[in-house]
Image 1 (cartoon, rainbow, N blue to C red):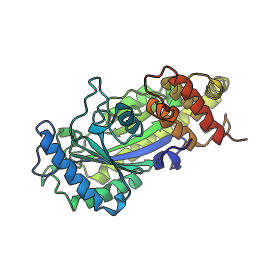
Image 2: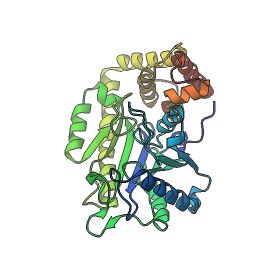
Image 3: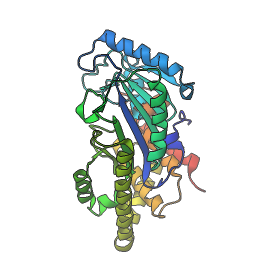
Image 4: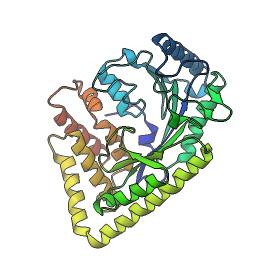
Length: 352
């Protein structure tokens, strides 16, 4: 099976055994246009046209794909959300199932621009591993190119203006998706997360804001954007994530010393189920992938490439499974399709 290219999954970045990806998001709004909550369908259509025209002139966005979410079926909208290029709200995946008019996303590899979300534009760069500088560089270049063509709402004292006060200032949200199973197993995770909250970091699940933690994957990000420069925000996040990485590695040392048999049993069970189960629910798959990732990282299991385990985080989700099996989201056989898909991907990469 071949997935469309996603650099943040298919390339290896720094600290790849722990850090899946780094994301930078810049919130921007068009000057002299009503913000979300006060704008109309006509306003949003105008913003769509403005962004589409400007993006067509940006060399780095040559070949990008433009998706009008308000004209797509739910399966496709969910598929885009699973690929981390659109938020749940913009894709209309809440219980109401309503997609706001003018909702759109422009996708170019690991970069995306959400249009008419809470802000007029949300410029995003997603890179593999722990790489805040590389991710910010990509987002900053797009921001600069678009800023030459679109006048953004900016105040000389407060910075970039936003529909939400927490995004005023730099408009920057930097986040790192990190795997912390040893801290969970040693019951140290609560203390670590509490410490991060006290110094301005928040945590979410795999899908960002509003999502719960699954598979021991934590998205760590800054809480505010006002009062600090981009460099200060990135440095703050980088230093704290480095500390968390150290805590996780020390927790793994404790497991090696005090719970070798239990860890080996856990990770080999996870490997056996992933390789041989006939049906797999997605949440179960995430938990099993967590066990396998821990086993590979600790040298207990065969060295399955981290890129394969990363790809499975996306490929095993409902919309991807349904598209691969050419079926619908309501197909009762989806868990069986998922098990076969997981095993096929592992067969392609398993060391012999």
